[in-house]
Length: 156
Image (cartoon, rainbow, N blue to C red; front, side, top):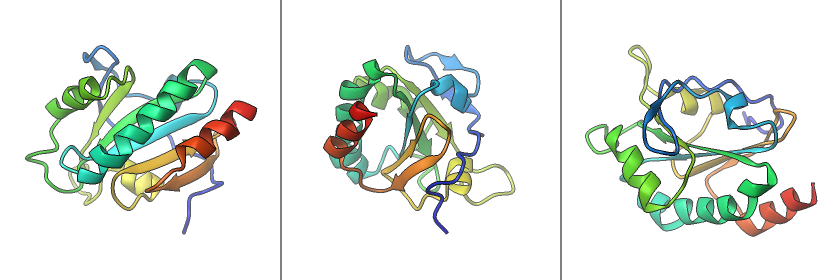
C-alpha cells in the first residue's frame, strides 16, 4: 500500500544532530518548517546514496532551502549497524555540506525495521519523501527528478 497522499506520520527517530553537528532533541515534523518538507533516508554504506541520493539532495537543498522548503536526513539502520553508526551522521553532513538535521534511526528493541521505514513504508535507500505544506505525503520513492520537483515547488 502506498503512503502517497496520506498524512505524514510524526517522526519517531530518537537520535539527531543539528546543522552544527551537536546532539539535539528528537526532531518533529514541525521542526522541519511550516512549508513543504523533503526527508531523505540513507545508509552510510549505500553506494547509491553517495552516487545519486546525496547529489540529488544537494541540488534540492541549494535550489529550495531559501524558498521555505524544509529538509531532514535520516540514516535508516536496517542492516550493517557496524558501519551505519551515529558517528557517520556528521561525516556525511560535512562531506555534502548540508546544514540540516541528521537523524540516526535504529530499530526499536522489539522491531525489525527502523521507525521511519515502518511508518513511511520505505523499501530501502536512498529514499526521498516529499511532504506538502498541508502535511500530506506527495512523493515517496527511491528516485526523484530534482529538476522537476524544483520547478513544481518554485511555482507553488
